[in-house]
Image 1 (cartoon, rainbow, N blue to C red):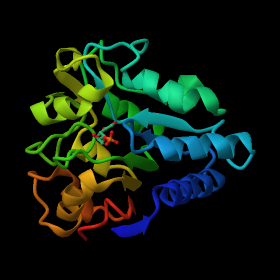
Image 2 (cartoon, rainbow, N blue to C red):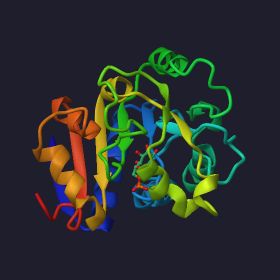
Image 3 (tube, helix red, strand yellow):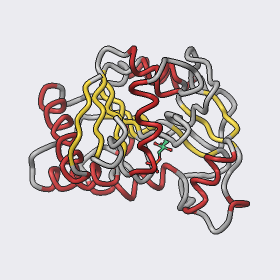
Length: 237
Ligand code: F6R
């Protein structure tokens, strides 16, 4: 893994340049999207670059990591809504080629893997990391061989995400997420972490053993991962 440490602003700008390079080399690249607070700076930078004519998404496609079960794309806490409002509505991507797993039709989650494969596979997967080491919503204990599946969210994840809802009772109990194998199938991966609350888990997943107790630790075995950290998230390395 290559680890890059700088200010939150600079890591967003540097990560965005990886998208510029990829889309220049491969205009129809397949991008793996993430939600949450961490990618917001990167998405704002991609919007800026797109408006400035320095990057085009017009032939690109995207597949997002995850979605809450029970929320449709019009719900303002759904991940489809998040992606539309923070990225897709502001760039020149063809919305019909943007994919977020359905939180409503969850009859065959692994069909998402087949869809990704049929599209040619993810070129660049973006990840944040949960305080418990989750990537996507693959909580500790998830088998490394997992494909897209339904998960029951841990109390700590629901607690962490309740800030976006009126109360904890409104936070969905389940989500559909790409599996760890789905994520590892991506040709390249960027993981971003910002802030001191992530410092402990950042140290564990980079410098600790590869274990299902820390799902992100599997990334140590991926051939092309870049980890972008701000100084606070990198403080314990
Ligand atoms: C989001 C996702 C999650 C988040 C993680 C960090 O699609 O899959 O794994 O990346 O929970 O969230 P933030 O960025 O809000 O700290």
